[in-house]
Length: 288
Image (cartoon, rainbow, N blue to C red; front, side, top):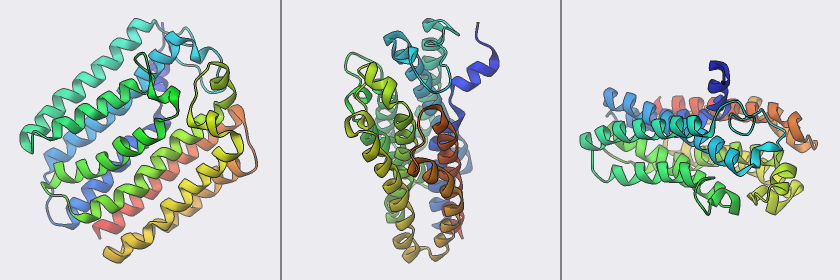
């Protein structure tokens, strides 16, 4: 049986900034416009984390039963590594999604029933990334869905749930957050290009190849920082986000010099740290 530490590792803590940062930025936007319902903030944080954890566990289950995780350069997965039964991982993923759906229903009752569509879409996107007969993650569309649901929808939705309105700033701030979320996926898939290709998992990284994927990662980071400038037209203190360039140096360097395989794991962790620092600084700049 898997240990508690192995179950925690299966939630992929390095990817959790993708669940935290959009909510932090959304709440900061709500605060900037003077309307924050703090109970809804708590609901939004928990729902976002549950969807992210459910997605990671569903990915562990689906890749494990397909045999994709039998050859990988990253940390061992529960199913692929034989640490837990597929059924137990599937149940854990479904419980996470179910709890997210219940709490999301509460949030929808407090705001708008249309929120149910966004929540259902996010859960479906989390499951079908590697689940189902035709997972979109195996066809190279993962980055598009991540940008839409874990970037745009997450920031804009968080702003709406916590304030009851959606200022234009929410749409603008959602773009760099979404791009950095995509960067998290890109660095993960860059590491797994050889094993994914062997397993016939046609991620965007596999389709583009190693050199172009590295350029894509660097471009995502660069564009994210450049978008601080138009945001600063509305909230000038948002320029404080450029301080996160210090954190960006390490992952960009590792990608630029051609680091491969398990040696890219620190780049994934650093990308998570970059997203967290960028998001927190952006949120502070917007809130002030």
